[in-house]
Image 1 (cartoon, rainbow, N blue to C red):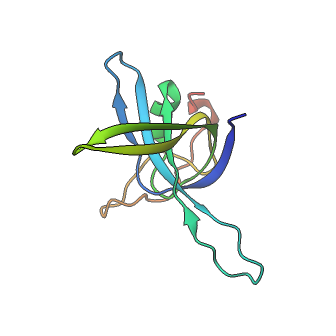
Image 2: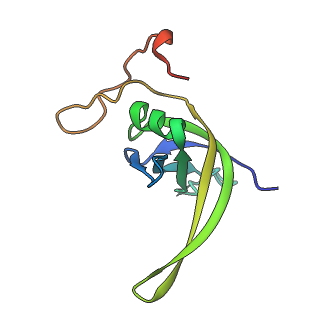
Amino acid sequence: MNNVTLIGRLTKDIELRYSNTGMAVARFSIAINRMPGKNGEDKGADFPNIIVFGKTAENCEKYLAKGRQVAIQGHIQTGSYEKDGRKVYTTDVVADRVEFLEWGDREQKSDGTPSGFTEINEEDIPF
């Protein structure tokens, strides 16, 4: 069984591209805090890479921004590629479902950071 459920915050804005067949592909990573130790000490965080396809990818790019919290359901996928004559191994989470726990239009302040959360009318939600 290969199922994963994660909740975390985007570490940067979504990177959206299109395949040669026109399929939308979004890539991003999220920060997930580890459970505190027995004495309450901070155990750090993990930063898995997430891949999303199709309309969900386009909606992620449109409505999510750095710092927003999301829940991801999907599966782990490993792969490899050659770089400078060396084999590089990858581990990604391919999202089957992305739930926006905090979201709104991606308005930006002049310094490039999200300006907070913009209220969206329920009728404007594309899914």
